[in-house]
Amino acid sequence: MKIAVVSPNDRLAMDIVRLLRERSPSDEVEVIAGLAHVLAAGAGASTSDVLVLDAPSMGEGDLDQLERLSHVHPRLAFIVLSQQTSPEFLMRAMRAGVREVLPLPLDGQALSAAVRRIEEKRGSQAQTHGKVLAFISCKGGSGATFLATNLAYALATLKNKRVALIDLNLQFGDASLFVSDQKPGATIADISQQIHRLDASFLQASMLNVTPNFSVLAAPEDPAHANDVKPEHVDQLIKLVRRHYDFVILDLGRSLDAVSIHALDHADTIFPVLQTTLPYIRDGKRLLGVFRSLDYRKDKVRLIVNRHEKNGDIKLRDVETAFSATDIRTIPNHYDAAAASVNQGVPVLKLAKSSPISKALQEFAEALCPEEASASSGWLSRVLKRA
Image (cartoon, rainbow, N blue to C red; front, side):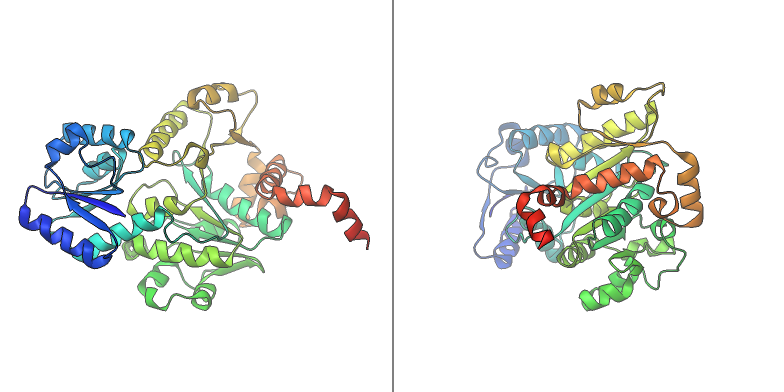
């Protein structure tokens, strides 16, 4: 990769260059003009893959210019070194297109890890694995966990796929309760605390088996243990899981932080879940704005309208107009079946097969596995089946 370093501190700039060259001697690293020059003219941005900005204090105007620069050079990844670490600044930086914000004074290992994550995201170490599907709520109570868990069950039972669900709602996750009455023997926090042990057997031993080919990695029981799960743990975990499963379902809750963004980076498809009310639509538009700032492809994000009612005040066409989308999936409203499923901890497909929700989930699973439908319709397939 080609990495440009911008710093008003010559000594720090040289230290950054040294650390980057030690990390990968094959990378091309150079120091370019100051921050103001880069933001104003985009100097060095057009030919670089990564821009490391030493900016102890960035104003709103700097972030606005950085956002414009990210639009002009969408493949350029930004790493900002800053003394500003407030949640407000981190969110604003993320919306401006910054991939990583590292605190000052600089930690060399943190910088190397940040560059490595960007490198991996670009596909330099890409491998073919199972599909990763991320479910995220546009607003609390959208039903994202219900859909994530029940779709996972549908893929496992109806399509005979190996499915893993990872509960990344780290403070208040309860995904396992939606599909099982068993208590998880371990959680993602337990794995993170022993990340050096992580392999396929340790992973399998830590998961709750709902069916022979559907397993859940539960969220921490104690919200305090959410801090045990780091972005690098999520990277390592997802890479391992997708090597052993056909589908990896991520239940992200509603939070957007370093952990959830790293998980979203791995996702093949992101499903924001909303309902047809104005607060959901407003928050959904905000969420999609964040995804655009993270440089996610438009076809990576597929909206789901949950608890859809054809005769509601807000029609599906109104939602399509609001989001400029025509491929929004809908899950019909059937409160009795959904409530019974959640209260009993039994997948809705198992509890109420005739529910319109079950039918919608079956169609969803079919859409995710289209190759089976096309293969079964071919004349050769029918001949082989009779043989």
